[in-house]
Length: 275
Ligand code: FE
Ligand code: FE
Ligand code: ZN
Image 1 (cartoon, rainbow, N blue to C red):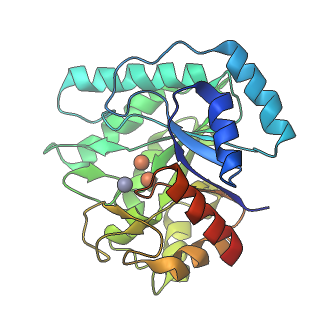
Image 2: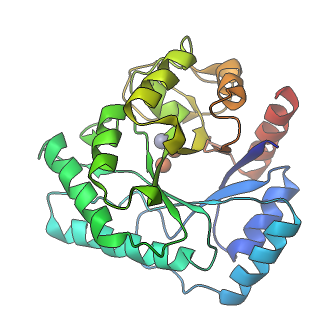
């Protein structure tokens, strides 16, 4: 069964998001664990989380994806920012234990002049300080567009991070179609080739989720500007090829396109129909 949804506002809690995604034809959703620019999170509403666990089972919501704030940068040159990143992620993962068995995605980080190698070492070090055997969440590195000093714009960099994490079974990757295209991987003409390269470098078994976004920019632009499905350089056919690919088809797909709820609903209906 196709798992498709979109990014939703987390305000109002899990039950509100669950009802909202069903109302627009989806069966999974992504949300920010806290303000995307950082800051403290509201305390977990345990009754809401418990109600959601039951509701999700009854309504075919098999998995959800929490997204860390953008400001989380585990490889900043500023130790205060690195410390904030580690504390935020540890807190997010503790909170995710109220909805066990789901996914937590983060942007590996930007090394801001320290070099990719130093960045990778710090990111892996942060993860090793946070991950524990008893966690029930899989932590995903997002494939990045390679803008500025972003780490994770190549499959090799993701592999390097994963290689250095001790609790490997807790880790995975979220593939973002806009980001990989912007990073120079030609999923428009050679999706098979890109996935073969991913498999050789990282391993397809590490892929746990897909962000389906069109891109405002041509492949290799290193920009990271999402576009509505069918209105960008990837096009609807490329997005459908991703969704139908045998290596990806069982993964959950999340729209992060520039839309309000009604626009997301239209894209979900369109993609389900074409799929
Ligand atoms: Fe992201
Ligand atoms: Fe994304
Ligand atoms: Zn993006």
